[in-house]
Length: 497
Image (cartoon, rainbow, N blue to C red):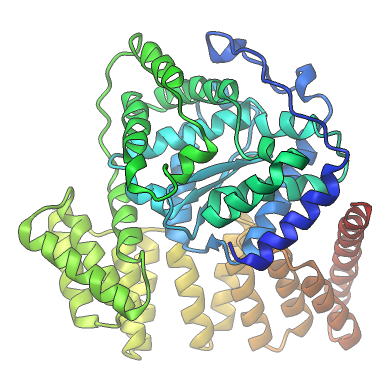
């Protein structure tokens, strides 16, 4: 997180903290999750679920604009599928969760109000089993279920969403950068920012207890929660600041570890087999930890050494990692060889493999072959969003705009918040000269990416051009009014701080 962004956050926090109230301790947790405070209890009566969601979405938009969110759709889809499995637990009912990838090599994850959860790339790579990764997600879901951030924010006696957003951004700043954390801690003594940097011990125990139930009901190995937390604690000496970022924002005490272990004594041991997607996602993120030429060379050398020494957890994933690096280096020969090896050891193809194969064909300007392979891959793996995005780009570049529109509209009927599909739809509309519909699609894309002014400008241009049919013009007018009203509300909130 850069200095300018931190300065903005600090300025808002200072301004809003004059009236801030000290945060009191959390109530002592009950023995099991269903006896803990639930949504709708007195502790959560002030901040509505809708307001929580607005806060979370605003923060995510700010992070996206700052370039903090990684747009890798394969990893994002994997995280959300893993989260969906965890969301079947009884403890999570009535909550909606979304997960996104943060472009950071540090070990961290954080829950925003409204069930929006960020996961750092470094945390995924550090997890040695899928149950370990799931345990962190489940813990963060526990914070959401118990409404810890909402309860914290309510104690600040703030009504402005912008002020609340700034407060949570301050917490994220502490989790993204050692310098940011130090700056906020220095300010904290006078304005209570130190009280926003971490959850209390009681809140952490609540999240642990809910998380263990979520993990167990999801069919994962609950023992891996204490294994992963213990390994993070033992890694303290490796970090200059004394502990991984996750432990700085989620303080791990001996009492908390003992509480988790005591609860595990009543749990039946369950062996959970990692999914191949878990291994492939870890291999991909590890391979692309550094994307500059020198970093890619070092990553490739490390992967090739592991393959030679057979020091890998999953052989198919090891070869896939090599293919990922080779793809970033535009070494198509190695991509093909490595993917063949990965497919051999996996015993079947995989959508991640097919996407890289299509990329290689496209780089070689074999457009027809790329389109044919893309169509076949999407037929085999219709739910792979990365393959959908890739095919849309190929169709638009090949001038097959009507095919692109049909595919985009089909996808948007299932996933209306996919900004990349809206972008391809806009490109296809423009390619056919459908300017009004193209600008309408562009506006939807910008709005989803947090660019309300850009979205409004697209719709104003569409009105001035007056090239749309009556139905499209009516949709443009209606959407413009909606976005202008939304922008005005947000602008008014900013003026209140």
